[in-house]
Image (cartoon, rainbow, N blue to C red; front, side, top):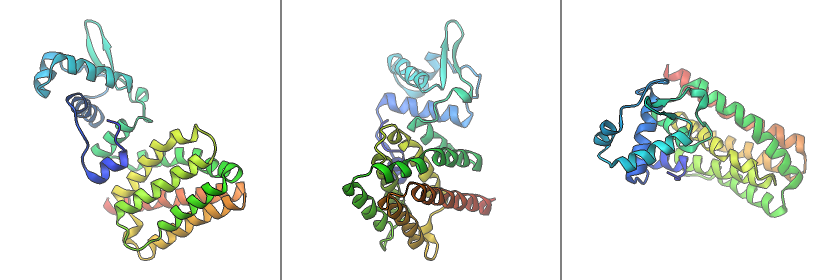
Length: 247
C-alpha cells in the first residue's frame, strides 16, 4: 500500500496482497458512504466470505483501518465507522480513496489551503537555506516542465518532482512530510484539468515555476513565498473552472 498516490492514479493500478485488497475495498466502501459514519461493519464471517480471505487476514486489515482512524472496534458491539473528523487525511491511502470515489470543489479547495499554509514558507526557507546544487536542480526541474511533448501525466509527475524538491531544499525535514498532500492536490489537477490542453499552458507553467527558483536563487524569501503562492492559486483556479464547466 506504499505506492505513490500519483503513480497509482496515472497507471490506474497498484500491487495487491490479500491484506492490501481487503484494506483497499473496505476503505473505499467507507469513504464512499457504502458503510456510513456511525454504522457497524458486517461481522467477520460475512466479510471473510465477501473477500474470500481468512479471519486472520481480515483482523489484520481491520487493525490497518483502525490505525488510519476509519474504524474503531467495540467489544460485544462490533467495528464502528468513525466520524470523518477522526480520519487521517494525511494518509496516502485515504487520499487515494477520496479521489477514486470522487472529490468535490470543497475537498480540493481545502487541500489548496493546506498547501498555501506550508509550501510558500518552504519556498522562503529554500531561499534562505538551499545549496547552489539544490537551486540548480530546482531550475532543471522547472525548465523541464516547459519541454515539448508533455502529456497530462508526465507534466503532473514533473510538477510533483519540482514541489518536492522545494520542500527538501527548505532544510526543514518536517516540510517533506507534506509531500502526500502536495501529491494529492496535483492528482486533483491531473484528473480534472491540465495546462497541456491549453494553448501556451505549458510555457506559462514553466515560467511560473522558474520564477520561484529565480527568487530562491536571489535569496529573496518574500519573493519566493509570493511566487509559490501564485503557482498554487493558479492551479486552484484551473481546477475550479474545470469543475464549473462540468456542472
